[in-house]
Amino acid sequence: MTATGTTGPDTPAPEPFGARLRRSLDTRGPLCVGIDPHASLLHSWGLNDDVTGLERFSRTVVEALADRVAVLKPQAAFFERFGSRGVAVLERTVAEARQAGALVVMDAKRGDIGSTMDAYAAAFLDSGSPLFSDALTVSPYLGFGALEPAVTAATASGSGLFVLALTSNPEGEEVQRAVRADGTTVAQTVLRHLADRNAGAEPLGSFGAVVGATLGDLSAFDLAVNGPLLAPGIGAQGATPGDLPAVFGDAVRNVVPSVSRGVLRHGPDVAGLRDSAIRFADEVRGAVG
Image (cartoon, one colour):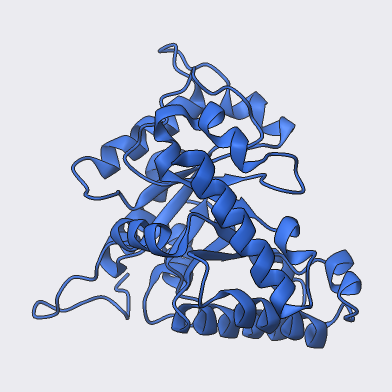
């Protein structure tokens, strides 16, 4: 499959996601804010649980935050549930957020094999796609090698991946902490693959892991993958910025803390959303040094 947005022989290669992310975290603050328009949050904002409410919610978040936070992370499922009109809102949300300067991580957790993985990669990692994002969350549980189409597409377009490794949901342990025949856990195998992909990248590799901020001591795992660690769980799920050094150890500077409800509950007031995001970013900066 040939991606429509790939560069030609005379076109400079795009700047890698890892380099762009490092710069954005350093200048805008170390924070990712989720865009999670689930029904209860729409209702708390005084919006209907329909496409009109979805668009009003998403545009308000983009207006409030896209010109000042490092990363915005729309959860694709909350848009897809409205069918084609919801996906159209997602397309506009991604485009407007990126135009305002935020990096967009599409939280879609895609994972498949062969031509199907090619198609997912084309949808989210081809620069000619209306859903083109700076990075995509993916699942490696059909085998890390099955993600190769996404790795190839991300490399070509200057995008990145966040691969599920140590998620915060308790059900994840039965797979992620299972021990393979060679004595390593499945999660550590994923982390090792990421370290190999990021070898030699400066200032930061483009292939990161999803590692829950609520998991406590992770010293049994080598998180030094030379790539970003997307860390959901800050705020409403119980983790605080002050927990990050104990959870991530020496890898803490590469953490991208993700907060959703902790910021979004302050909407629809634009000033409230901004103040909350700034406060979280300042607290993270103070905690990680």
